Amino acid sequence: MSKKTCIECGKVKDVFAFEKNGKYIRNQCRACRYIKNKEIQKRYYKKKSSQSGYREKENARLRKWRKDNPFWDLGKLAKKFGYTKEQFSLLYNLLWERQQGKCAVCKKDLIKHGKDTHVDHNHKTMQVRGLLCPRHNLGIGLLDDSAELCSAAAEYLRMSKADK
Image 1 (cartoon, rainbow, N blue to C red):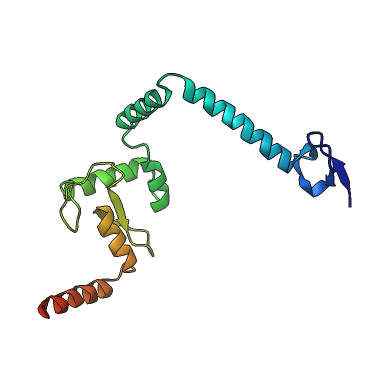
Image 2 (cartoon, rainbow, N blue to C red):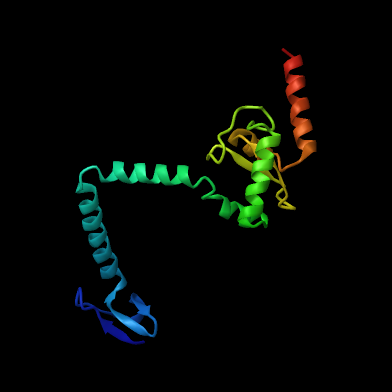
């Protein structure tokens, strides 16, 4: 088993304690490298946060960018459902217009392209069904996308209401 000396701590360690950089083995062991990287990160973030109003400016910049780019996260969803970004954008707008900007279940107003607007889909076929609020999207998902389970749950609620 081969050994190597860490230039940072001076300890002789197994080569497995050192990271590989391509075909070369680094001169610092993983533990020392981790500590050094943490120190560098602390200095960097301390410097950034000490700049007056940095966080507020950065948050304002991101808010403006998201407002100017409403489809910024649709690429990820489009790929998930097997569409191009343009196709998915058209589908999303069609669903939005058809549902008049409301949840398909409870008719609560949704925010277009908001994080509280979920794209409901069949988990087996990945076919998009509509736009839902988070509660109803989660509820349908927890009921395994099964109409039978939803009916059984509705019947259960009706029976428990009749008992009162």
